[in-house]
Amino acid sequence: MNITKQIFKKSVLVGTIALSIAVFAGCSDSANSSTADTTNPTEAQTTVQATEGTAKSGTTNESFDLKSLHTCKENDEDDLVGTWQITSGEGSQYASFYYMFNGEGKSILISGTSGYFGKYSYDTDDDNNPTFTTKLVFGLNGTYTYKLSDDKKTAELTNTDTKAVSTLKKTDDPDFIPTPDKDASIDDKLVGCWKSESGEYLCFDKSGIMYQNLFDYMFAYSNYTASEGKIVSTYTTSDKKTTDKYTYSVDGDTLTLNNDTYSRISFSDLK
Image (cartoon, rainbow, N blue to C red; front, side, top):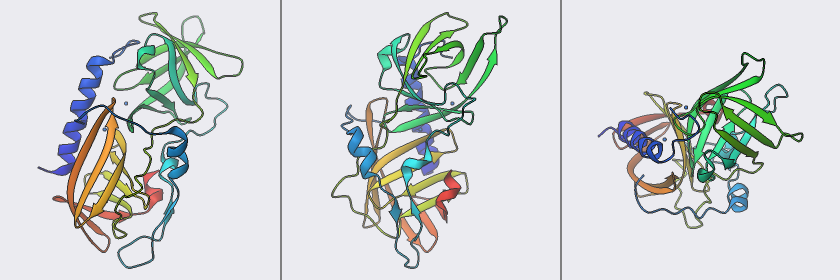
């Protein structure tokens, strides 16, 4: 089966399962095995270092930091820019989810080491109260009036349709990148960033972290090992750990992953 379609089908299935258990706050923006995510927040954020490949033929000499792919741009005119978690009210039973509003109109629901993309915008209601609308595959999805605390670290959102209230707290150090495995096997020829003709992005760093972006629908950070033409990657979604296996080969600036072909690109093309 085409690997892109296989992963996309799996991701949609996981999203459907998550939707069935996680619908809240007016719900209407990529997985199988036991629950387990023992990532240490501090360790995860300090061990994902900038990668610098060698300058050999077929490898990359570009430095990059996978953590920088999903961050928030400071914007004084964006009241909810940042990363939040629901601490009380509607949806608080899913306190492990992160909701990122990046300061440029893109919202991201983050579960485990995976994220689902959406959009958000601001307006006012008939009484001239500020409103916030976000479109995500599940979770915070709808239009809300909102109130911010004086320090802008807490937000109270009220769904304009259901009147359900959710209290959110800003998170300064979101934990969604796995800790690299100490004994990961790394193939220098694989290190770098790649794009398929269908629009899927892959990136492998030298610490053992793989990044995958499926058509700007979802992304996943995974632990990976690569040796003897085989890749094994593991990521989590909705507290479910998934292990995927691939065969691969690298010929200069061309990566063949199972039956799909990818071309080497610059890290800046992922942003």
